[in-house]
Structure formats: structure tokens, C-alpha cells
Length: 406
Image (cartoon, rainbow, N blue to C red; front, side):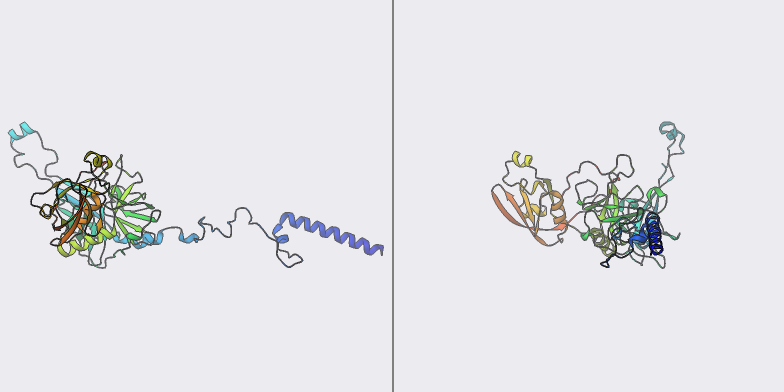
């Protein structure tokens, strides 16, 4: 009996020692053992291993492989091209005259060409390329270079300085084309990629988010409805693509706000909803047709309302009316405050500009104004908006915007 007790004691001692050693060196072996009720021991993840509910990517609910934008870049990048432009400057015909050279000196730059580099987006397999007007404006020679190394001379199909868009045409086979997205579904915070050729270094992809929507009154274009993004946009990106996380086109990169000439995290893109309408008009008619009524508008501020003793607090003050123009013939006078055009309510000059531009020339639109304490409705025959002076858009947004005639 004593011998059996001794054997039992030694076995228990060895067993306890084994459990102690195992629990110290391999605690997971002990944690995997079942309790008497059959449930496993609850365990915490060991240090250095990711939580079961949070993948290694650090983004809850998103697989690690889906965090990057390589698929979107591969889908959209082949459709983004470099646009290389040049313009020859003419030399004064009297540059060889000794007396001319004596009084005016040697004319620098005479006969030399000016070159520029921008970007563009192939929008159809037929060879149509969408870009900014200021990239190709007044250029004599335009060449498009694809990511596969192919080059082709481009022809300007049409340009619209007021929206800063232009359509080019190239003749190449087997062209990739981008997929149009729906920019109206964009929300602040959505991820976007900017693809272009900044500073001529070659195609570059940068990422960011949508910082704001509907930016206007920046003084860049006549018609403004910009997508603002912090994706890096630099000189040379103009005309390139702003795409979503799936590689769908959401906008045409157009301008930046900068004090140094480089990226400061504030870039602007023309929404694809606007770009597509302009593109289709340029391809079909070679121009964009917009409505016009011939008034000089100004934003109605509380100070102006108080100065002119106006009873209305919201609308657009008309400071001038073109003599014998559509608005004048319809009864609109200086001092009237326009509050509605057709079905659109207007609260600032941008809204008035867009509302009138959207009217069909030749149609009759009802314009509602406040005159004193009266609300008047007038029928105005819409004319076609005159062509704007072809001026390149600034790369840096000015602080103020001049009033436009509408």
C-alpha cells in the first residue's frame, strides 16, 4: 500500500511539473484543452498577430488585397495620354535691317517655337480625346503620345473656352477608351485618383479624396462647378483624368490653387457630367450653343439690399440691361432682382448664368423679378450666347472673379 502511494505521489509531482513547464513555454496548448462543460478556454490573440475582426490592412471589413488602387490605375491609365504642343513665333520681317537692329536690338526668341505639355483622356475607340482648352489654345502643332509609346498628330475638333474644354481627334488603331462614371453620385470623402503627365516627367498616378463639390466663383472659367480634391495635381496634369476607385472617369483635371506654382492640396476638376455634354456638342456641331438674355448681374448682398432699400433678400441684382437685347425687350430693367428663370430658382450670379445658359436659343422663358414691392413675371425670348474671347485658363485660381455679362 505504501509503495502504491509513493508511485502515485511521484506521478502527481511529475504531472504538475509537466503542466508548469508547458504552461510557461506553450500556453496555447493549455488554452486549447476543454473544460468540464466542454467549452474551450477563451484566448486573446498573441502579440504581433492581427485581431480576427480587423484584417492586416488595418481597415475594418476590407480585405488587405482591396486597399490599394492598382486595379483602378490599370484600368484607367492606358486611356490617359500626354498632349505635346508647340507654336512657332514669327520673326519681324525687318530683323536683318541694320537700322532696325540699331534702334530695337536683337529680337530674342524670334523664329523659335514655344512648347508645352499637358494631358488628355481617350473617350472613344474612334480616337476622340478630351482635354482642356488652355492646353491646346493657339497652338500650331499638337501631338498625342500613348502609354504604349505610340504617337499621333491630333486635330482640334472643337473648343469651348467658357468651360475650358476641347476635343481632339487622332487616327490610330486599337485605342483604349475610358469608362464614364456618374459624377453626380460623388460625395465628399470619396477616394479618387488623378492621372496625368505633371511637369512632363511621364504618366503619374496620385490619390486623394473629394474635398468639396460644386466649387464656383473662382474666376477660372465662365461656367464653374468644380470637384475639389487633394489628390496631387501639378502643371502638366491639365486635361488628365480624375477617376474613382473603380477607374471610372469622374472629372477632367483643370486647375490648382497655388502660391508656389506646385501642388498645395487644392486641385479642381470639371465634372464628367459637364464635360460629356460639352464634348458631345463639340463633336456634333463644333461648338457649344448656350442661351443668353443680355443682362449685367451682380450678387445681392445684405449691404447692397440696404443701400438700394430692396425688400428682397435673395436673388440677383441686375445692374445693366443691353439696349434692345432679349431682356430689355421682355421688360427687364436695371435695379430688378431676378429670383427665378424658367423653373430654376436663382440666388447668385453663378446660378443665373447656368440657368440662362441651359435655355434653348429661340425659345421663350419666363423670368420672375422683384421690382420694389412687386413680383413680376416676364416672357423673354432667349438668344444665342455670343462666342467668348479665347483666353487660356489660369493655372492658379485668382482671389476674385469679375462679373460676367449674361
